[in-house]
Length: 278
Image (tube, rainbow, N blue to C red; front, side):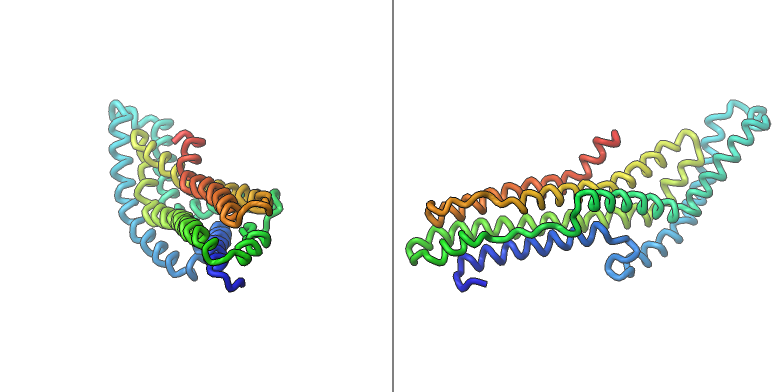
């Protein structure tokens, strides 16, 4: 690493960004069962098991209310075809609550397969790192004291922006894991609404919303891949320009690309929901 403070500040900011980008890449390919050693998942499984009792109680309630609203009289309930329809609905809703965890993990595995396909098709095993060009390092090191003053201001602002953006991005990805855990823990309650025809839209909305959270990972991976392609083709450095101009041009374009990436990551939920019509 260079001994120049300006170069060190920029390199430290880029190192923080690269670390968070690599962490995101790892998190997207991590399963909820193995995240943080699996301790969080164990608690979520226990909560899900406890909430199942509430879900089964609500199952009977929604089934009864649905039967009263959809049947005009007791005579209709006695019809074999109608009784069979009610029995099948009750059994499917009971199965959704009992095996809801397996259902949600199956959906997760399907989406993870999609994410792996995107990574393999793009040919990326990891996100590309942003590196300070050698030309800028040389130009900054050759600057005198007075020439370095504007460079200090540029690097302070640029380094701060890069660091803040890196933490905003990683917090968004962690937020996706929080949502996955909350959906899994409370799943028996919305799944119990499938027992009644008037209330089944709640269960459908829950499944769609859960799939939307899963698919956020695909959008985040695509955004990281696009950014990596930008990072692999750094802007052309004008070696005839002043050092502060070189640094400003490079940092400005880099921050612009980072803002686009962070914006895409932050809006991944909205993008998926618009695609799914939620």
